[in-house]
Length: 411
Image (cartoon, helix red, strand yellow):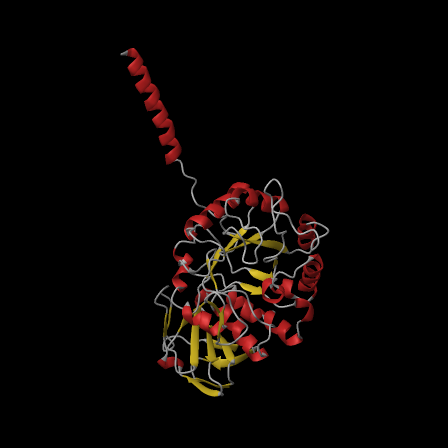
């Protein structure tokens, strides 16, 4: 009887130990407060894909500072896919490609930091990256320690080669791994919007992609082998205009990297940059900074538009009363102010007549309102950088094809 009792006690103790282990769970938790305004910077993918090296990064960092982009707010340099060797080392560690980065990745990170900038890297939740390099599946905590050891500031985490993997679980695991490694790193979820990361991503990441890849075009769809498409910037904005309530400080809807300077007209680049600013999307340039035209630089460093994007209220614009071929986007700003963008989607110019007193504004998601019959606002045209009267009189302007007007309304 004593033997049976002792056995039962031991078995009960064993079950208790296992039960305690099973009830322990590490809470999901990103590093809070790292992206209180949409991140701004540069990413290598749009122009260079995997053709990246140490020289490119150093030259880009130098020009980001000398061009005035850093002063305008661009501070992240992110190396996308292709920075590592095709295989991990004998201990399972990622290996920066010694041919592309002969000075070593840590030295390169230090160089970027010496310029007053921040550094980011790319990997993937799957077994391989989109370019066929080692993915992070099964190596999350090991890779997080590697990134912490390099002292990076930003991780873009893609979604290729993830068959059979649960997206929320995969991103939560990597988020926990980064937190455990101890180095504050902005976590960018690049899941393409397939499983609605805006619904579950807030405690996990600082920003999340909401669509497939962007294309350098106004309103196109580029179909690719493998049954996937990339999209013009107007199509991306249209497809995700209804998820704005999920975006805000430290948890941003990411409409993908900018295509400014990548082959569209200057007018379309201006419209693209305006819309991303209105949508509170991260402003991540993707052009070759070493070859950008004065017009491209002027667009990317428009401080008035950047201020709209970086407004501390952090509310994404909503589409207001769209007319045929004319979009009107409205964004509440801090201190009771507003930004309004008119976009001509047609192939010919349009005359705009916007009677403020007939168009009072109401933000259904966040509760902000503007009654132009009760209050008068000063108007500033942010591309012409000039005052344009008040809301006491209708706004009238001619708008060229694919062009944009952005107005700031100040009480």
